[in-house]
Image (cartoon, rainbow, N blue to C red):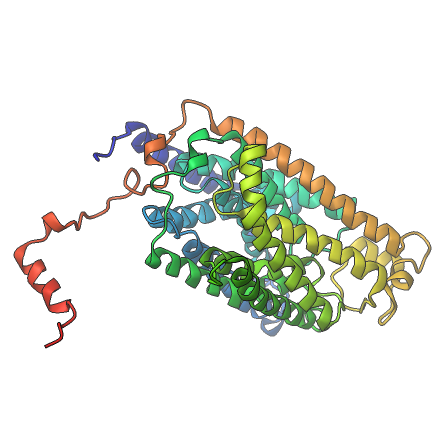
Length: 473
């Protein structure tokens, strides 16, 4: 089949990227300076080299980059004819979103005396914002053009920043790893868009919506990268010391429990006892999503293992039963199953954090509580959640539990409505829209060398024969 050339793509993609990069260049020139720890001015750089945040943050920063650009990219390469799109467009929207987040978050949170102060911590926070767009894009993977993906990022990032500010400022959510702020928000934002992009013919499956052993293997390798570095993602913003130590341990235990549960549950649900690669690629990570919100709390090792098991079970059951139901009843076609990996475990994790706040002892000396709450209550190390949060009578564990639940509800509403409205904007006719026949296909977007049998010259065929297995004599 010949590929229909779309001249709008050649026009729109360079223009949008040129305008965006040029606009940000102007903003950076006019408004952005390095912060004190990165400034070259001797008078402003009062931080000793050994105390520079670089040495505390950069090891985590590298791990998170591996997760975003390699892990998530490979994980999205599972489709047979859309592996380039999964990796390359993930690379594109990650960089687009990070730069855009630096500006949005800069004006929102780091604007001082007419300037944005930029440091490594800002870039790290921008990557957290970028993750939301990258996850949301998974719901419509292969069904939209790169132009539409860029518009998605442009609209989602500001809404993420506002929602993150809202749930921390007014609901004092404790969410060190972003279960609500990142995973739940990105999930339901993506599902809101997916509802607008519902296509009736996809109910019976698309001819290109298939995988190969090689593409599934690449996706599984991406899962392993995410699995290995997930403790860094959940612990990087925890206060250095005991809280960060707990966040690493709790995340590892939850991920390990998710892995064993996935193998057991997937085999149990198969009539032949075979393990689903889709389950391995997703449910093994569910524990990392669920534990993120309470990773730095003292939830006990058993609690971390339990959350990992529950998250994995919910993810697998979601793929098995809930995704087909949502596609049939709600007309929401979730391409990558982000609801199963990010939505359901996110809800379970939030419920777990409520239980932890109500009943678990909390080491308040280094827990990553909201700064206003921390300093208002004069919290003491080793106190229970009830004693710690209610020490001055103005904020107790019940209030905190209600704040956790309210933040979940507010995030759900904002993200779903925001995603639905974004989906309507992405359907504007002037944007490039891939036709149904070219869903899940790399060819309209990439220069792919044709290596079919008819194009091999005699030397190629000779070389291929040398690589064929020897016949038995």
